[in-house]
Amino acid sequence: MAVGTIVGAAFTAIVNSAVGDLVMPVIGVTTSGVDFAEKYIALDGEDYVNVKAAQEAGAPVRRYGIFMNAVINFLIVAFVVFV
Image 1 (cartoon, rainbow, N blue to C red):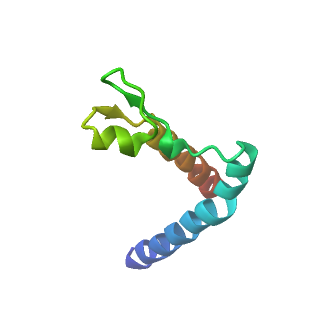
Image 2 (image 1 turned 90 degrees about the vertical axis):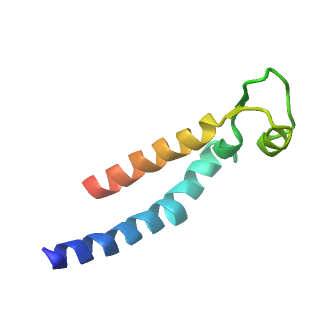
Protein backbone atom coordinates (compact mmCIF):
# COMPACT_ATOMS: atom_id res chain seq x y z
CA MET A 1 0.00 0.00 0.00
CA ALA A 2 2.91 2.34 0.70
CA VAL A 3 4.26 1.73 -2.80
CA GLY A 4 0.87 2.64 -4.26
CA THR A 5 0.82 5.88 -2.30
CA ILE A 6 4.31 6.81 -3.46
CA VAL A 7 3.54 5.98 -7.09
CA GLY A 8 0.26 7.89 -6.84
CA ALA A 9 2.05 10.98 -5.56
CA ALA A 10 4.58 10.76 -8.38
CA PHE A 11 1.79 10.28 -10.92
CA THR A 12 0.01 13.35 -9.53
CA ALA A 13 3.10 15.43 -10.26
CA ILE A 14 3.22 14.08 -13.81
CA VAL A 15 -0.46 14.76 -14.43
CA ASN A 16 -0.23 18.29 -12.97
CA SER A 17 2.75 19.01 -15.23
CA ALA A 18 0.92 17.62 -18.26
CA VAL A 19 -2.08 19.80 -17.53
CA GLY A 20 -0.15 22.97 -16.70
CA ASP A 21 2.61 22.70 -19.30
CA LEU A 22 1.02 20.86 -22.21
CA VAL A 23 -2.76 21.23 -22.20
CA MET A 24 -3.47 24.66 -20.66
CA PRO A 25 -1.31 26.56 -23.20
CA VAL A 26 -3.38 25.01 -25.99
CA ILE A 27 -6.59 26.05 -24.22
CA GLY A 28 -5.14 29.55 -23.83
CA VAL A 29 -4.54 29.75 -27.58
CA THR A 30 -8.01 28.44 -28.44
CA THR A 31 -9.67 30.97 -26.11
CA SER A 32 -7.62 33.84 -27.62
CA GLY A 33 -5.53 34.25 -24.48
CA VAL A 34 -8.44 34.86 -22.12
CA ASP A 35 -7.20 34.83 -18.53
CA PHE A 36 -10.07 33.39 -16.52
CA ALA A 37 -8.32 34.34 -13.28
CA GLU A 38 -9.15 37.98 -14.03
CA LYS A 39 -12.89 37.34 -14.36
CA TYR A 40 -14.77 38.75 -11.39
CA ILE A 41 -17.86 40.60 -10.23
CA ALA A 42 -17.52 43.51 -7.82
CA LEU A 43 -20.45 43.18 -5.44
CA ASP A 44 -20.56 46.91 -4.64
CA GLY A 45 -21.79 47.70 -8.18
CA GLU A 46 -18.76 49.76 -9.19
CA ASP A 47 -16.57 49.14 -12.24
CA TYR A 48 -12.86 48.58 -11.65
CA VAL A 49 -9.95 48.19 -14.06
CA ASN A 50 -9.03 44.77 -12.70
CA VAL A 51 -9.57 42.52 -9.70
CA LYS A 52 -6.53 43.91 -7.89
CA ALA A 53 -7.91 47.45 -8.10
CA ALA A 54 -11.26 46.27 -6.75
CA GLN A 55 -9.61 44.49 -3.83
CA GLU A 56 -7.42 47.51 -3.03
CA ALA A 57 -10.56 49.68 -2.97
CA GLY A 58 -11.99 47.31 -0.37
CA ALA A 59 -14.83 46.13 -2.58
CA PRO A 60 -16.24 42.65 -1.99
CA VAL A 61 -15.30 40.61 -5.05
CA ARG A 62 -16.69 37.34 -6.38
CA ARG A 63 -13.85 35.79 -8.39
CA TYR A 64 -15.72 33.30 -10.57
CA GLY A 65 -12.76 33.01 -12.95
CA ILE A 66 -10.69 31.15 -10.34
CA PHE A 67 -13.53 28.64 -10.02
CA MET A 68 -13.66 28.24 -13.81
CA ASN A 69 -9.91 27.54 -13.84
CA ALA A 70 -10.34 24.90 -11.14
CA VAL A 71 -13.18 23.20 -13.04
CA ILE A 72 -11.21 23.16 -16.31
CA ASN A 73 -8.16 21.83 -14.48
CA PHE A 74 -10.24 19.10 -12.83
CA LEU A 75 -11.82 18.01 -16.11
CA ILE A 76 -8.43 17.79 -17.80
CA VAL A 77 -6.88 15.85 -14.92
CA ALA A 78 -9.89 13.49 -14.81
CA PHE A 79 -9.57 12.86 -18.56
CA VAL A 80 -5.83 12.20 -18.34
CA VAL A 81 -6.31 9.80 -15.43
CA PHE A 82 -9.13 8.06 -17.32
CA VAL A 83 -6.97 7.59 -20.39
